[in-house]
Length: 112
Image (cartoon, rainbow, N blue to C red; front, top):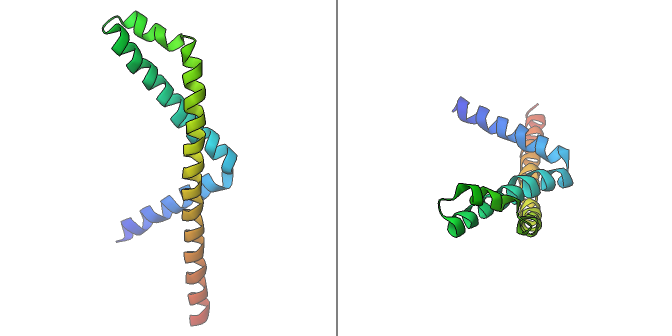
């Protein structure tokens, strides 16, 4: 029970730190870079494998093709949307944690 409570407290602190860094920071870091760029690289490698099969030089050369820029822009836009959706969820979690803490504090004050 104590381990579970400690883990929840650690998650609360982690969520709070992410929230304090701000919306734009979160969307760019976790939406555009973590999701958009990584998906772009995966898609380009998969496309290269389907086009060039086992010719790895061409597969990885495909990563630096002009089309990659368009793919990067597209997935970065979707990454920003994903980041915004996840920010909404994070914001909801942080506000929920804050309301729980305020209720607990009110109950402690009433008991005193």
